[in-house]
Length: 217
Image 1 (cartoon, rainbow, N blue to C red):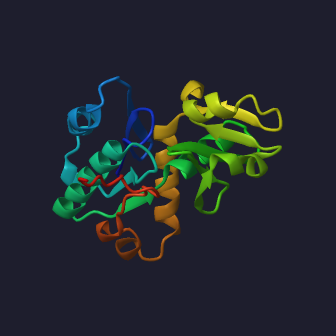
Image 2: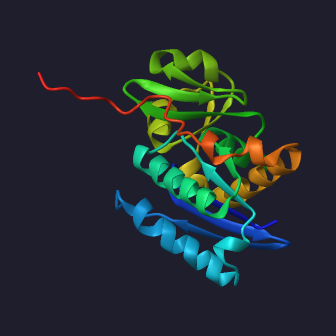
Image 3: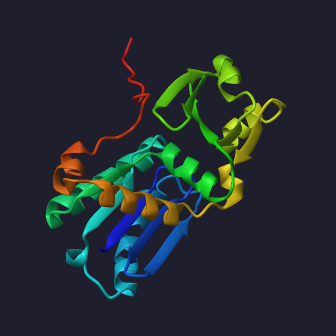
């Protein structure tokens, strides 16, 4: 099964390709705010060429639907939808929090939760079930005595809290491309109806907070 994975929602662009013992990945970090659209398609083309396969040889696409950068989420979902339509491929939908939680567990962190900056005085909180939107003033009780995987903003805000252990994933160099591949493979193998379960029509951005709408006075 030839599986292409890509994520533009987190701190880097993550792209991987795996099949039959073969695995290759790219991780791209830049300060350019528009780097997702600039690098994603060329790197997908490069990773396929390196493996000597064409897009038509792919069996599955895996992508991260967020939460994360609005621009990043849109970039990944747009590419995933176009490829799925053109190539008639299933698309496995992951979210940023399950990726980070799985990565932390794989690296030996016991029972981690995930907290990400949602801006506007709120955090995304994930403990393995659903992603919740929590006011910053209310996060303390949820993370008490826990291992907290977080981004750099949350780490800066909360790491002085001695009742929890904070791990800034951006400093840990977690193998997120590999984690995405393994998560996608597991979901495909557990599905009884791949075409329906992973139809591109079910591909939706996991913004939680929608982009603000500005109106004229």
